Length: 427
Image (cartoon, rainbow, N blue to C red; front, side, top):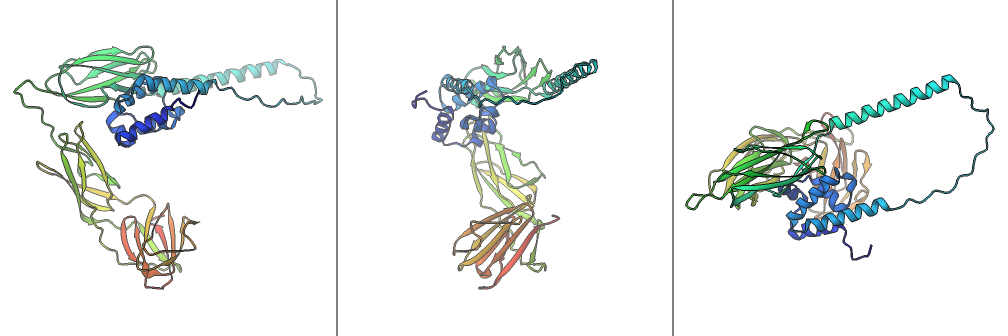
């Protein structure tokens, strides 16, 4: 193979970066799991579910990136074929070991024991095979259309995809719901009838070998109305977080709105949560600093994409919060949620007003990059641990501490040597 042949992962990554999207967004818009996308781009084909599904992923991903899917499949086939044809190096010859021993005598008991061992081993292998196959859930991937469609001009659409070989694919949620059977390689194609307005087409596959159903995959197809008929209206929703939900930050924001709608997401703290950590001095005495009230994060601005979906994240400290999603036109959605403290400990040291000597440990391990050195005015140091942090500074009046998003403030006075032990509450 010459240097002119492109690597599949390089082609995919370059096209995605040229499109200006990350893997999280690609997963949302193509319905291909992020770990499979990452495996395709890194060439880790062992992490993919199989050749049939991989070809479906490549057709879907190629259509999304405006690449020739057959070219991508050829690259995949070439790379996987080359990998399997690579010969292994023979090991060095081993000398025959000469050992004097008693002659091996075959007795009826030995024969019976051998037969019993082989039989039990075969039975266990059969049980394992049956269990794995019984527990396997078939994959289902819609490759065309790659995502939801708005302003579709026709009243019929053909969907193609991949699933388990010979699986039965059932369409639901329409006026007429056909059922078709995938071919020997798992490919399928089905044409369905639509109505004017919004059509949510749902597909599910059943593996004939395991008699198990796949997860439901769906596409929303909005058919443009007749001339003079107003277009379908997309109602703004907030799908996540749910009302009165208890979540662990950062908080995922997801919903739908008319394509192009700009939304502002703001958060107001109703009740601050109790700190999920305790601070003691080097001698073990409790340290009770004056905690500053948590500051609400800056407003998050999101825009609904062409599929009418929007999504993002807000970093919120522990407590009860009121979220408000305000579109550029229309009524806002208000939702109350409870945010629980994060697992473990995270801390940020902000050096402000002078330099300071630092000695830092995370779960008893010294942080080599900064410990024993002087941090400069303006430096920021981030720490993370499961249970304990040790923070020793030589100029406490210049070190401002934030733990799990809660502002603790300065550790002490100028030129004062202070040591804190931060322990996870209940740890």
